Image (cartoon, rainbow, N blue to C red; front, side, top):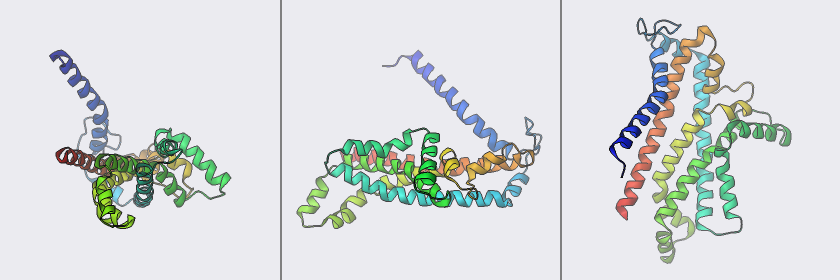
Length: 269
């Protein structure tokens, strides 16, 4: 058991960590309403002017649309490959199974700059492909697949193969079993994985920097390139505030879904 002093110390440490993480984020949101473009503190007044300017910024709108398109496509690819890989590695046994599982998970564990340089070299020198929209989607899918794969693996391990075996005993084929038995049990796990994958792709900047063409500018890259331009600083704060909200929503929903999944599994047992 944890004594009272240890409990108090843990609470204090948790509070300090939360302050360090979330106070700067709150400051960005507040500064997006700051009347003064130099961000004097405390603000002399609040305004929606910078939000209106950001809404009329063609560069910001194009970057936002591109980020959403890339995230949606990367998530779709991750769903397809994550389901197939998760089913193959959980339901079958073959030589090198653990190595394949490690290779699937590895991209999200590697530093983003290493992944970016490797993919840049692969696209440009080995495959002779020009960097552009498609290369960004492929690059993002390499680490988005991990979230779907892990969720599928965890869910399959939790439910076991008994229901699928019962379906096969009743004469159902592999596709019918997947459609009527396996997929419904995986649905919430897949939704949680897809939300996490979308969030990861939407705010990715390091890998994108090495795999985007000169014409492609996602929202995180747009923010970075305009961060030190005095005239654009207030608009950058607005876009950054939007990015925080858009990234937080799918992560929150995925966390809630994962919590519901665990609660449901515990109740079933």
